[in-house]
Amino acid sequence: MVNPTDLVLVAIMPSQRDLEIARVLGWYRIPYKKAPKTVSVDRIAFYQTARFGDEKWAINFTAPVLGHELVTRAELLRTERDHPRADEQYFKIQIGPLERLPRPLPSLKWRRITFLYTTGERLMKATEINDLIVDSEERELLWTALKERGMKAEVNYEAGRGMQVDFALLCALGNLGVVLGDGKGLKERGEWKCIAIPEAEVKNDLPGVMQKIEAEVSRLGGQ
Image (tube, rainbow, N blue to C red):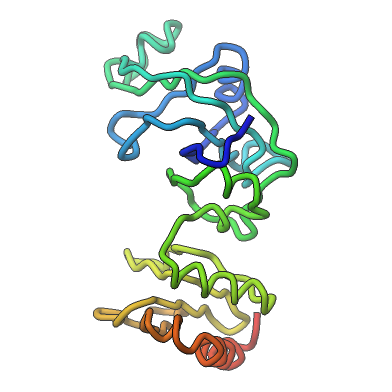
């Protein structure tokens, strides 16, 4: 059972085979070289890839974390001792029974996910993956306002060439990237139009911020 105070790690579930290992053997592996900052969490939630057909690009299952240890790939998968990465280290995350969420949490637009942290409360209240992202008060205010206006946005979006925007609104004639802060080094690239909005402006004049964003979306042909 998910507790509101649980620290939850959202992680990739790459294949049916890995899902069966989690379900039957009770563990999940993370390459040490690609591991997140901490694997000492209360619970893990699995984001399923395109290989899962009707359940792709969504979180359907979660499981309690019972512990972890550092082992080699060969120790994890004893039938693959000749694998090129047999000697590489992996975190073996020991988990309890898989629990299906009351409803799937989809990524409304396909996005590349590595790892992210959230809380049990967010996991149970979310309607899509963007709702899981824990962020500043200003980002929360703007995210809520965008949803209330029916504007579809992606949070912490990779806009190409290493540029990340706080919110991405994909439009008919291009894409709008919104960055909170002074926007230093912010450049328009290809099909991206980017605007910077001071965080104080979000707190003090949210209606004005929304008008600014809606005007830019309109110039880009709407969503």
